[in-house]
Image (spheres, rainbow, N blue to C red):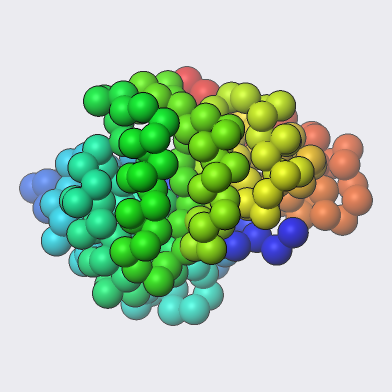
Length: 243
């Protein structure tokens, strides 16, 4: 399948100055470095990017700065997920205005809503802008799963095009890939090769912040048919991916 947001995405860290202010020049330099070294997509304001602690204005400024740095060389996916549907919609619209190519929307966390509410939350966000969405399924952090039946229904929305998968349910991911057009991205670096090998779209990698070319090399080797090299490179990336 065609990866909707690129293949090797980095969940980019957000640089700050020693005084604690947002370092936009540092963000520009980092974004350029990551793209030059092999990333074809950047996810901004995810958990790795300090989304719980940055202001709405800082999130928008970060998108604008990174867009200036990378131009059209990479897609920019903006993390906009919050437990508040109205706030998430507002962030989504701001991200669109700031120049994002897509949105990453995590399941509403902490309050543990039922599946009907989770579905309604995502549909409201999908209807709020013209940008495509990746849904972020990470129940260990949010306290709630986006259940497979919910994902099947959400996949019918034309702007819900991908999933960042941290469910650790590999069987369910394969079943959903076979039944929908959703692009599945490994959100856990230890799954990058495994998910890609069964039809995943690519990865959203935290390790890519420090080794972007190595993360890409795993997928390049697999695409070239050198599965032994792909496995070797993946194994080399495992120690940095886990504490």
